[in-house]
Length: 118
Image (cartoon, rainbow, N blue to C red):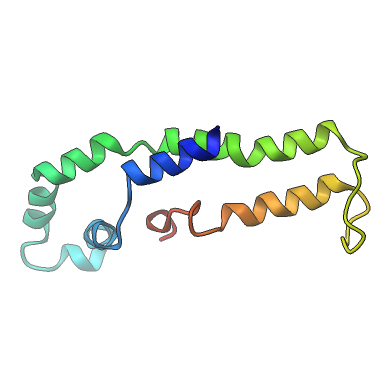
């Protein structure tokens, strides 16, 4: 099940706020002007915990897992285009409703990777 794979991936490869802050510190021109900036970035990149983190983290794999999970539900809905929809739905067909559900899913906390939003 792709959802289990995603949750397993999230558990094994978490991106914590602390790591996000450390990485973001090296992302702007103003920070380069700070004394010792380059040395800190080099030290960070040479640290064993940073290397271990990068060896476990694979954005392309995460993307593929999430794509299969989210787009798979839309594909399934497209295969049954005239299935019943709730009476309170603003849509006449279920596929557009599923598309909205899928787009919203992309922005949920357990899917969106906040370090990639800067």
